[in-house]
Amino acid sequence: MHWQPSMMGEKEMMNYMAKDYESFRQSLLELLTKKFPEWNYKSDADARIMLVELFSYIADELSYYQDRVANEAFLRTARKRFSVGSHLNLVDYRLHNGCSAIAFIKIVANSIGFIPKSLQVSSYSLPTESEIVFETDSEKYVYPSHNELKLVIPDGSNELRRGVHSAYLGGWHSHIRNNDFVLFEQEEKKEVVQLIEEPVLTEISIESLHGNFLDGKMSKPKMQTEQNVKVTKITWSANQALQSSYDSRYVVSCTNIIRVTEGMTISGIDMLKKGSEYVEDFVFKLKERPLAFVSDSLLPYLAKSSLEVWVDNQIWEETDDLLDAGPFDKHFTVSVDDEGYGQIRFGDGINGKKPLPWSTIRARYRTSLGSMGNVGRDVLRKFDRQKYDFIASVTNPLPAIGGTDMQSIEDAKITGPRTLKFQERAITGADYASLIKRKFPQITDIRARIVFTGSWNTVIIAIDAKSEHIADSDFLSEVTAICK
Image (cartoon, rainbow, N blue to C red; front, side, top):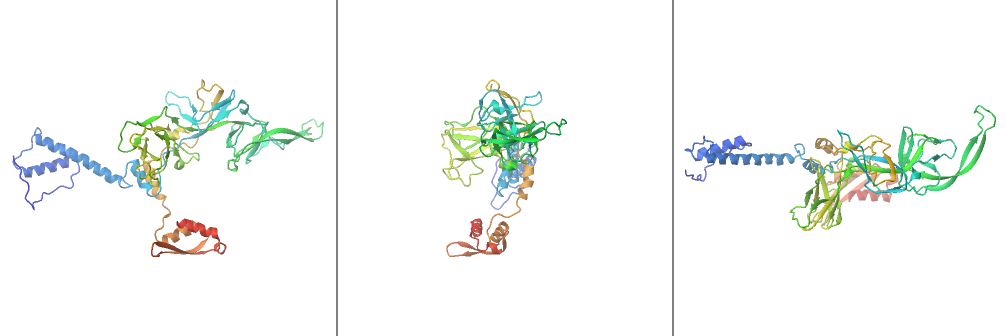
C-alpha cells in the first residue's frame, strides 16, 4: 500500500462537528478510505484500526480540554473555584473562604497560672462525631481571686442597670488589665464585655439604708449612712452596653475569660520545599484541609487566613494579590481550591519577590470546620489537665458564633455581579462628574471635561455647591483627592 500526497488545489473536507471519540473515529476511517480505497478496515485486529482508535481517544481528550478551557473563560459557565474567583476579582469582588467560630471560655483557676496562645480546648468526642477544637487567641495569666468577683453599686440599689458601660468590682484587683474580657453571669443571663481602658483602683462612698419601717416591725425609722469601700472601676465600650439588668447580690463577675477561635493547628510545621529541591513555579498546595480563616468582626469577607510562611527562616507577609507588589516585597497569596486545600503562590520577581531556587519554605496553619464550629454553651470542657494542673475547669458560658462555610461558586456567581451598583472608575468627563456628585451630596451641580494641555490630559471641574461649602478649603481638598 502506497500513499501519494494530494495535488495542490485538492482539499479534503473536514468534519468540524467531530467532538467525541465516535465522531473522530468515523472521520478518520472515512479519510483513510479515500486515501486507500483498497483497504478493508473491518477487522479490529488490524494495527491500523488500533492507531485510528488511539488517535481518536487522544483527540477526544484534547476536545474535552478545549471545552473546559472555553467554559472556564466565562463566569456563567466556569466550574472551577479559581476561575470564578479570577473573574470576580476583575470587578473587585472576592469570594470568601469561610470563617472560624468565636467563643469565650471561663477558666476556674486553683492557683496562679499562665495561659499561652494556642491553648487547645475542645468538646468531648462522641461515637458518631469527632471533637471540635478551639484555640486561645492570646496569652493571659489567670488568678483564683478572679474566679468570682462581686459588684458594688454606689447608690445602694443593688441593681446594675441595663445600658451601662462601667461597673465597680469589690476590692482592689491590680491584675486586671485593659482589653481583658469580663463575664457577668446571673442564672440564665450572661454577657461578656471587653475593657477599653485600664481599671481604676479607688474608694467610693456607699449609701446604706437601715431600719426600713416597712419590714413589718416598724421599730426604727428609716436612716441613711455612708461607708467607704475599696473598689476597682472597669469600663467597656458603649457599643457593648449591657443588654440586661443584674442584681449585685446574685450576679457573679469573672475576669478569667479568654477568647478562643475554632480551628486546630496542624502538629509540626509543613515543609513545602527543602533547600535541595528544585521547582519551576513557586506554587505549593497545603497537605491538610480546610484552611482556617479568622475574623475579629465575624465577617467572612474580612477574614484572614491562619497561614504563616517562612522562607529561609524569614517570615513572609500574606497579601490579597501581587499586582501592587514590587520585586523586593516578601509577599505571597493564598487561595482555596474546590476541595478546601490552600494553595500558596509567590511572586515572579517582578510582582513580588521570587524565592531563591535553593530556599527552604515552611508553613504553619490551622484547619477549620466552618459552621460546624458554632457549638452550644458549656460544650468546650476538654483540655490537657496534666500540663495545666492549675486549671480546675473550663467551659464556654455562651454559644460559639460566627462560624461560616466557604462561599459556594453558585452563590458567588449570583452575588458578585450584583455588587456593581455604581461605577467607581472615571475615564470620561461625565464619569468624573458622576463620581464626585455621588460622593458629595452638598454639590448641587457639576461639570467636568478633559483638556489636553500640550504634555498630558488635565481634568477641569466646575462645581456649584451649597453656599456654606463654596469657600471651604477642606471640602475642595476632599474633592481633589477623589480625582487622583
